[in-house]
Amino acid sequence: TERGMSEEKESSDNIPLSTLLENLVESYKQVKADDAPLQEELVQQQEMVRHLNELLTSKDRELAVLRQKLQDAEASREADAERNTQLSKMHETALRDLAVAKEQANKMKQLSFEHQHHLEESKRRVKVQDDRLRSIRNLVASLNFNLESWFEE
Image (cartoon, rainbow, N blue to C red; front, side, top):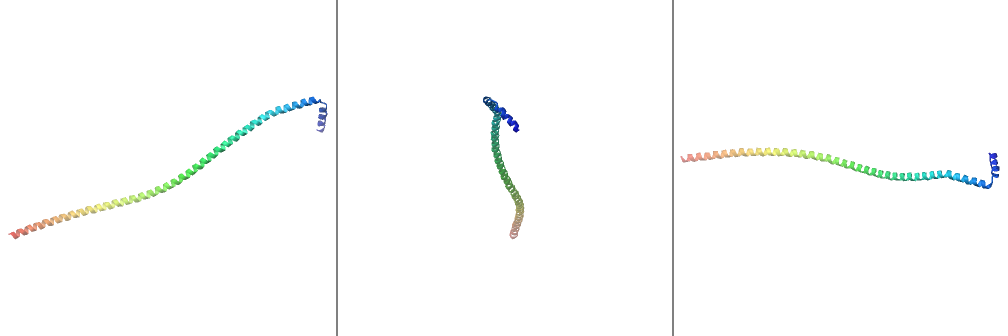
């Protein structure tokens, strides 16, 4: 390798300066020409990275919105579950109250029926007593008539 560098140095010493400058300019143009597609690719990659960052930022915002919606939905679900529990308890209480009310209504019907029966029985007894009283009055009137008839004779 030292020998190759030394041969190259000796060979470049023999080349005129203008030729070396031309070779250098050509090499620079070649490097620049080779570098142009790389620069263009770098610009495209930077553009792609910027675009992907925008997409990522957009998706992060969408994710934040979805998380908020999920939290809101969870809170709403919990509130609904609590309301359902309360409604269930109220329903059970209403059913118990209804059962008590039905029982009381049945008792009231029974009492009403019993009172009605007692009232009818009392009316019947009053009628029987009225009939007896009428019979007694008729008997007394008859006796009075008979007594008067006896005394008139």
